[in-house]
Image 1 (cartoon, helix red, strand yellow):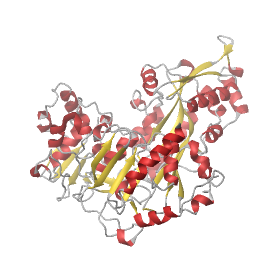
Image 2 (tube, rainbow, N blue to C red):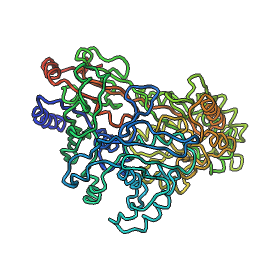
Image 3 (cartoon, rainbow, N blue to C red):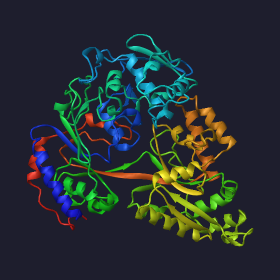
Image 4 (cartoon, rainbow, N blue to C red):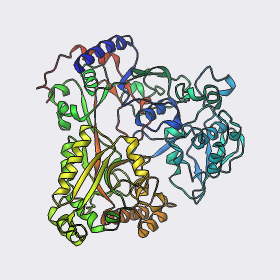
Length: 589
């Protein structure tokens, strides 16, 4: 049945895609179901990336620079800050315009500081229940008071947006200041996230809840079609601010204003096998490779010659994410017994998880991923390895020889919760139970849906659990905050608390990037490792396949608007597809 559906889907795609001949039309999968196109509600990967194509932000990440660095987007230049990074001053580019839309009059399209203020405050509007409010909560002066007042306001009442806000001072139509409650050298990273994109007030007022499906922005593209569970189609925004990409692959693109593609079509493909077949036939320009199809793409290693001859390239991309097993520190056995946690860490065989993932995982020594200051490639966590002999010794010192609880005469027993209930999660639960059984600890794997998992977490009913954290910005602090006691109940999911760690964390908060701060980051990582605050599993790896006619693809953790840089050569694609012949499974391995 799956193969029949895939063939039927291919037929529909052929009809749609051939109608686009002659244009630069980029075709890809959406990467998941797009739930909303409202920036303040877009907390999932697919929705956020779509928002990044339709809206613009004050700042953005340089597409090519590594380490990552911010550059002006809607701003005329980088903002300035006072000495203690509590006041930032901004100046907008004068030519900025919202895209043409029936909801906007001609006078509504010019973008001003008032639009920036309105967009920031929408994150804090309690009536919208934005899951991203935490990005500015406790940072911009006056935001909490606005949040509280908005919760009492009637739906559709925007009068409170017109009142002065201590943390946002408008100097002129194009100039403004943002004033923070306390020093924060990392604040500018927040302004590059698509959730802080600038939206027009008049369109929000006119469309109400429908604004989530009727986006009006100033980004590189505009929405021209959205068919649920089928496709989302974007077209070039003729009013997008002028931006060039002088490092483009082709000379002809280096003087061509962004976006380089005329259209982008995001197909919402539920079955990975369908996306795989479409990519092989040249009907998708770029495609993620899931675990089930990885063997058909060289197993993540060298690309099969048959695919290489087609000009296909395989990209192995470490993600800016850490997967871990958390201990509930409010549990009397787990939270109060460091040697028990260390023993359980040493019994956890990360290499088995690497194999289970199809080699889509890099073992981790600590919470900070590669690519940011604070990551030390030479650091070795003494408990991030599999050593059953040492695990048994520490378990005995913890008071549980051979895993036996002397108070009961029975083996220690803990629950182990995960956020999914598929066969893959079941297998991971079985692996965990087998690992800890080797040192005499019994585990009860528990499968949950997402809502049930987080409800149990809020109620403190978890003992051991497997989770991950995806970085919001390229700074080690974004990962180290997960261990700060002040964040217990929010991003500190385990309840870990250590006075020395807290002291170091509070020390680095007002510090800008420097060798001194990097050294403190490394001390904090070492402290976490020795305390066995987590079991560090690894950094996931994603695999992408691209065709040779795709231009300017560069892996980037924060390129929310990457679509404006990408382009295709239609004639090259057509010529290449004429040479494609069916491939056997043997040729794909």
